[in-house]
Length: 112
Image 1 (cartoon, rainbow, N blue to C red):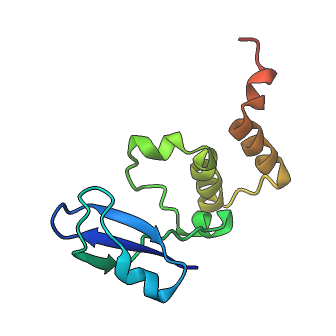
Image 2: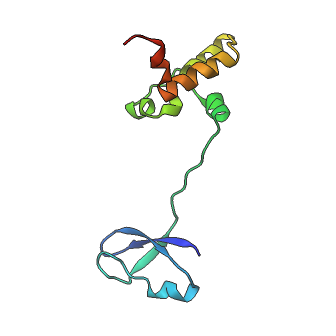
C-alpha cells in the first residue's frame, strides 16, 4: 500500500495519496481544485545519523544558525568534538554531563 505524492499542475499543490490498488491511481483527483491533471513526484525523505556519525562529520569552526541550538541533540556536540580535537578524553563522564544537559537535569546542580 504505497503512499504516492502528486503535483497538481493547475494549482501547484503537492498532496499525498494512499493507493490501495494500481487501478485506483487513475481515479486520483486534487483535493483542493478537483483536477485530474496530476504528476507523480519523488517523495521527500530523511536520513538519520548516529551521534558517532554526526560527531565525526561535525566542523567546530562552521557558523551555526539559530535552528542548530534549538535541537537538544546538539547540546554538547560542539564540546565533545572540540575535546576530541584537543586530544582530551573525559571518558564516560562527558556523556553523563551531556545527557544531563539535554534533559535539563543539570540545572538541579545549581541554586537558581
